[in-house]
Length: 293
Image 1 (cartoon, one colour):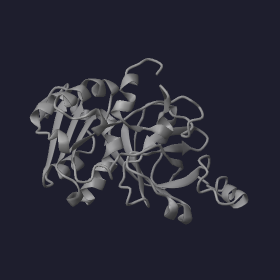
Image 2 (cartoon, rainbow, N blue to C red; image 1 turned 60 degrees about the horizontal axis):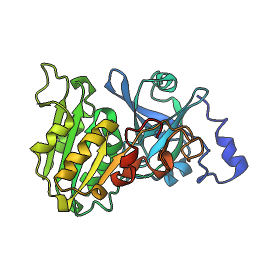
Image 3 (cartoon, rainbow, N blue to C red; image 1 turned 90 degrees about the vertical axis):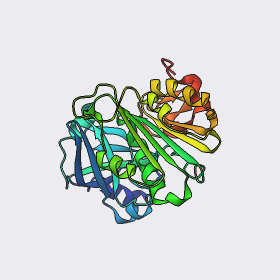
Image 4 (cartoon, rainbow, N blue to C red; image 1 turned 30 degrees about the vertical axis):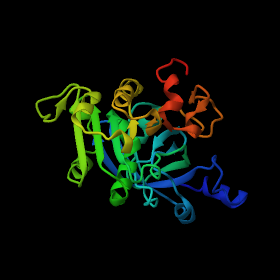
């Protein structure tokens, strides 16, 4: 697909590196099938200068644009220290993502971003990190996990607790296997509806809490997935002594602009596209599960 309709805009209007409205064309360099309806797209920004300047934090997202169709907010799942290639895991669920699913390596998507606030990885240094995820909710934290492992000596123990509805929903199998064999690391998996191939725990992810040792004074929790998991899971962790100020959650809402103008992602007084999607639990707990919040 031609990028000529995009690139001249920067030439005419000058330096647009900080303009959140500018769509930067990116080539699909690899398409990785994660499941029947889920693919990870490895994207490289076409313009070398834009590619060199692009920086993001683990937990942020891009607006991924398909020319002539529309755009959708997608978490960046690659390592922030490797911004030359940007990974996005996309489930086929709607009009835009269905059209994206037909694309192949060599074709072009647009990138607008990055947006939002990422995980508190600087604050987590020197502490034990407990990562709790559910379903495709693991995608927003993958980049954070890779970031931590690349700087393993700067963090304490790592505990990764991940729950899925069925074994079919387990993504990043090779990554989980790799993380499981890392020093001072625990990886616990569970499925609500297992089949004969499932060899791990059976049940919901919050049941895994009892199987790990947590030092409340030295731990920080990163959690993403369904909000009901957060509403039920965080109080269990708090009863074990972890303060609400040490729990960070990645939240989902429908995002259309990425800069807090359209209002679709409003949650109480916050706009998740710019105040989140990663937020400290004590700041948003009253809004979780509230219709219209």
